[in-house]
Amino acid sequence: MFYERLHVTFVGVLATLVDSVVVAEFAGYWLHRLLHSDKIPALSRGHLIHHFLVYGPRQPMRAHEYRDATDHRFSVGNVGLEWLVPSGVILLFCWGVMALLHVPHAYEVLALCTLLGWPILMFSYLHDRMHVENFWMAKVPGLRTWFLKARRLHDIHHKSLDSDGFMDANFGIGFYFFDRFFGTMAKRHRRFNWCGYKAAIERYGLDEAELLSLQSCSKSLFQKTDRP
Ligand SMILES: [Zn+2]
Ligand SMILES: [Zn+2]
Ligand SMILES: [Zn+2]
Image 1 (cartoon, rainbow, N blue to C red):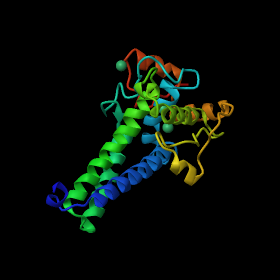
Image 2 (cartoon, protein in one colour; image 1 turned 120 degrees about the horizontal axis):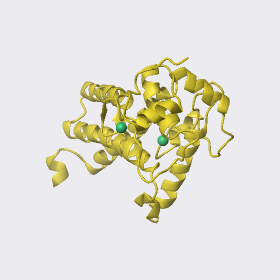
Image 3 (cartoon, protein in one colour; image 1 turned 90 degrees about the vertical axis):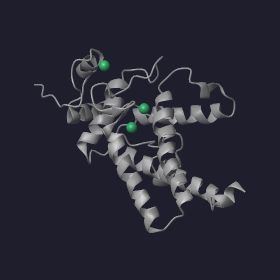
């Protein structure tokens, strides 16, 4: 049998997949929270370009095409350094833990592939499609209900600012069980906090003038500009 040759069992494979997805969701949730916490301002700034300049409060949540926030800075595809660097660290950490625990090689490879693939699928592919009209999942019965529900929660994430200008709800993308668990779930839209918005814009030196420069491809958004 295929399983025996690889020294794995069906249950083992299933457990590895489930565990890896849970770890990936957990890491994604906390990384997203970190990006909104201002603990590492350079990382936060990268993510907030997506929130305040590209899909800001005066812009529609969805358009014909995805407008990415990495035009004038380093990225892989449209994933910026603010996601890549911490994800690399997390992946290395998981690898180290598995090596220490002497996890069989086949499971280790499967876990690492899942830990890499799941976040790409959820936090990159699915997330970006939430900002695009007519995504195929919105038309497939079965997937449709789940996708539209998750998308609505992500819309709420974009609109939920506290008075210090920090986004405080719905950090999951496809799944929100860690939001439920850690008490950051918001199922309803609330009034947009313009005072919070102003605080955030000032903190990161982001404003819509920079959006114009993003569109004209003329200036690096990753550099803070001092304006009077
Ligand atoms: Zn966010
Ligand atoms: Zn978004
Ligand atoms: Zn450009």
